[in-house]
Image 1 (tube, one colour):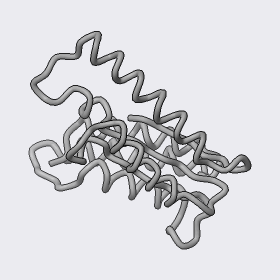
Image 2: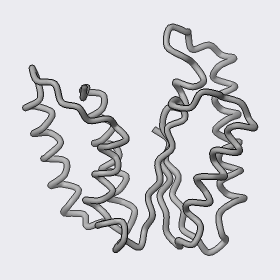
Image 3: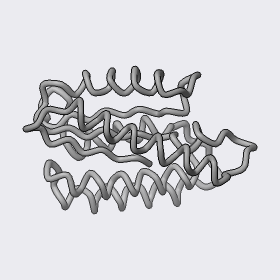
Image 4: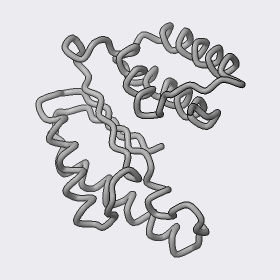
Length: 158
């Protein structure tokens, strides 16, 4: 079921895609209007669309079909995976970075990190915030070390 939060996140991603340099700025406005329309129309109806599906649709609308685009889009939802440890994060992130290899321009979207650090029903504490900040720094450093010096990699965490 699509929630308003999903639409908010898709609107944010739409804005990020618009500023990658690989997208046509007019398309972002048209897509925003479509998202607004669908959001208004879906009240009272159930629509099956996950954020991940919506993100891939947005990437296709902004950057064209996968086989024709010069920007590669990859999405990693951290909260969908079973384990959450530094070794596991390293392995999963390296796998995503290998997907991006060979592209001079790429966009890596990471979602669900907050939910992985603080599962549903738990409180966001100072210790969890510190852990979250450490994981963010670790991800940033690992992405920088695995990206080619001449590549243009954009990393977004939602």
